[in-house]
Structures are given as C-alpha cells and as structure tokens.
Image 1 (cartoon, helix red, strand yellow):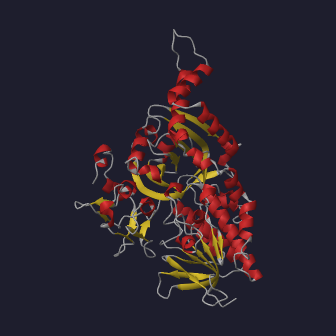
Image 2 (image 1 turned 45 degrees about the horizontal axis):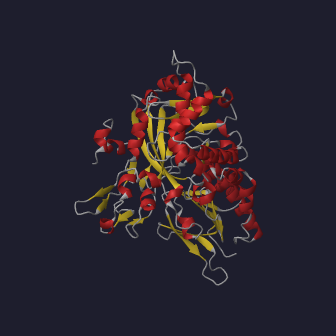
Image 3 (image 1 turned 45 degrees about the vertical axis):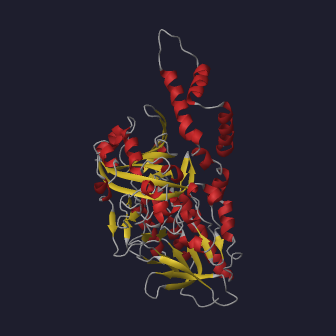
Amino acid sequence: MAEVDYDVVIVGAGPAGSCAAIEAARGGLRTLLLERGPFAGSKNMYGGVIYPRILDDLIPEWWNEVPIQRWVTRRSTMILTETQALSVDFRNDGWAAPPYNGATAYRPEFDRWLADHAVAAGATLLCNTTVTGLLRGASRRSAGIITGVRTDRPDGDVTASVVIACDGVNSFVAKEAGLYGTPNPKNFTLGVKETISLPKRVIDERFGVRDREGVDIEIIGCTGGINGGGFVYTNLETVAVGVVLKLTRLAAQKTRPEDVIAAMKKHSAIAPLVEGGELHEYSAHLIPEAGLSMMPGMTGHGLLVAGDAAALCLAAGIWLEGVNFAMASGMYAGQTAIEAIADGDVSQRGLGGYARRLSDTFVLRDHRKLRRAPELVLSDRVQHLYPSMVAGIAERMFRVDNPAPKPGLRRIVREERKRAGVTLRGLWHDGHDAFRSFG
Amino acid sequence: MTDHDETWPEISFIDRMATTEFNVDDKPHIVVDGKVCTDCSTRECIVACPADLFVPTSDGGIVFNYEQCFECGTCYLVCNREGAISWSYPEGGFGVIFRST
C-alpha cells in the first residue's frame, strides 16, 4: 500500500466515530478522528435514552465514569387523545444499580467523554474541521478506491488506508461515495426538543423518583394531524420535552414544530410535569426513521459507514434506540479496519468483515426482525385511529353509568372500534403485522 | 414573525432561539436562490424549518437567514425545487453548539 498520513481517518466524533477510533487505536492503527464542531458532541442531540451495555468490553465498568443525567428506572408508554391519557407505566428498582439499563444524558457531555476515551487510546482528535469531500486513487490500479478526505483546513487533504464515515444522518461522505441514493424525505422524521429547567426536588416529586433515578415517557397521539410521537424524560435538573414528526406530514399540515410541542405541553397529562419550568435550550435534529428499508450500502472501496450515516437507528415504537447502534457499528468498523489493513486488502471485499459483524449481531438482527415496525408505528391507523379507540375502551371500562348496567367488555370494544372508524380488516392486518414484527 | 407567537405566548420565537448557542460565520453555509422559489406552491421549508429561518418576501420569493441554523437538513429534504437550496455544513468550528440536549 502507498504511504498514507494515517491508517484510518474517521469522519465525525459522535458515538460511532469515537467507538471506531477506540478500537482502531487500540489495535495499533494510526487513527485520526475528525469533528466539525468545536468539541465532540457539540452538533448532537437525541430523543431520550442511551443503552450503554455494548460498552462492557470497550470500557469495563463504564458506569463509574460515564457522564449521565439519570438512570431510567421508570419507563412509560402513553396514549393520548385531546382529553384522555392511557399509560402503561413500568418501574424496575433493579435498573438503579449496575449494570443499569438505560440512561438519560446530555449528548454534548456523553459524546465528549467517549471521544476522550478515543484520545486516551491513542487516536488523534481534530475538532473544528469539516470534511468537504473524498480523495480517490489516481493510478489505474487505485482508481475508484477512496484514499482519504478533503477538509476545510489549509492543506487539508488527509490520506488514509480506510475512511470510516460517521458523519451523521445527512452523511455527505456516504452520498459522495455513491452508497446512498437520493434521500427520500418520507424516510426521515424531525426531532424537536425543549430542555426545561426545574429544581431537582420538583422533578423528583413530579415524576416519583429520587437520587439518580429517572423516567422516560414515550407518547403517541400527541402530534395532532402529523404522524409521529412525543417524549418527556428527566435529566438531573431539567426535563426534556419533544416531538418526532414525519417530514412529509409536517408541511402538509401547515403546523410548525414548536407549536406541536406547545400543544402537547398543554395536555392535562403533560402540563403538570413541566409547568413553571423555564426553557433552557431548544434543539432539533433529523432522524433516519425507516430502518432497514432506507439503509445505504455500508462498505465501499476503502470506506465503511456507521451510525446514523448508515441509518442505524431503531424507531420501532416500543424500542427507540440509536446511540447503542452507533457505538456498536463504530466498534465493528474499527475492528474491520484493523483486520483489512493487516491483510493488505481494503477493497470492498477486503472490508467484508464489517457486513458480517453487523449481520451476526443485534445491529442488523434487530433491524431485520423489526423491519416492518417503523412503517406500522407511523401508519395512519396507529397514529390517528387506535389512540382514540384504545382510550375510548378505557373510558367505557372505568365509567360507572348507573342506573345503566355495565355493558360488557366485548360490546365496549365493538362499539369503540366502530366509533373510532377502525375496520376489522385493518385491525387484522395491523395485528398480523405487529405479531410478525414484535413476536 | 408568524402568528404562532400569539397562539403560544409562553415564549417568543426570538427568546426561544436565544436559548441555543451559535458561533456565526461571516459567510453563509446554506444559500437559497429565492427566485427559484417564486413559482413554488408548497413552500414546505417555511413551515418545516425548526428554526423558522425561511421568510417569504413581498415579491413572492423566499429569503433564508443562516445565522441560527441547527444544520438539521430538513429544508433540503422537503424542498422540491431543483437548485433552490445549496446546502453544506458550516466551516469547522462554526454553527450551532449544543450543550444540554
């Protein structure tokens, strides 16, 4: 192989990039980690919870040092109509102790911590550096092979044997490499979030937790006519409130994102949780929502794609995960780079270990299993008809209408299904889909 | 400013955006050719941009203010006019800086 500046250059110091850098540097590769923000994590926000168990091998006892806000010990799913709320609320004391389950965190703190580990492992972290293009081989033998990146720094070309694109949901690296066709807006959602300041004591009381215990509430039926969902979760001294909106429906409804949040915050089930708090930070980000069906090619000649850049985000209703998929795919990309460079073959075939690693682990197994879930969760019936039906059934069950006798559950279900406009055929279809997806 | 400020008086949009930190570059990273927008009937960017940076002009065009951009990508995805938006990330170190999100 020709003389190169680095063995591997990684674009983007988010969770995927930093985990790739940790692996690569520990494997003895000369590793450059590029970040366009002033520090790792400065461009990143998310909608809730990090599930860090994938770090067990990389950073043993990570829980002793990871900068999290709260450990999630209460997980709720809430179905809203304009005047009703039905919650499934699960609390698990075991999640308040190592190895924990999920955590809320500020991504600028979490991502920075992970990038510090990459530096400690021997990687070079260069912030304030935007990648503007790819370098390709000039000779006939290397034509088409990606040989490095162009940055916006003076004399900013960097050559490397392997480039790992961890440049997020808009991945211009993957697009320039031809791995990503023209992106379809229907595959994306827009996440918009308010971080709201409240005293810790108030948060603890309102959400029924103490110490570092935290709550994550995922909500459906709170986004008006726009297909999507909402969330409320606790940080230590702030509460995060946000919505996730299907891009193609947002504009069609002529409703602005911050108005959707405002309407959700006025709901009687949400208002008492956040009222009196002051807006601390407003943020927004795109989410690659469509799972397996939108994933780009993940391996090129001299190139691997990981994290959101590879659309490795699981938006499956009950499960909403992304950071763990980013960390895992980054690790596997780093391991693959080590292997391919040792073998002297960084062609698409030489980098084939990446696809195998993704395919054999939860990264693609979860996505394959849940491949129908994202579409189902955002479908019109799930979004606009089922919340009304389910809340209607709950209301009729709990309503005491004396002197009328109780109607019986079967009759309630039949009547509420019809009232909500749900056909048996649609219900059967979605039930079948849900069973195949989640079963 | 659009009428949503009156609908939800809890905080003005200017105050909302003031909670987010930006290191603003002298030159814009996103350029909108407002002339292309004059015959656009959907104008989805105006509704969808979470930072409300797309402003319709009296002559039927659209002006884009790059300074408080989240760099999210919503605008180029919803835009259906070829050549209306040239989109890139800000130069290294510039643009949005998230802290508590």
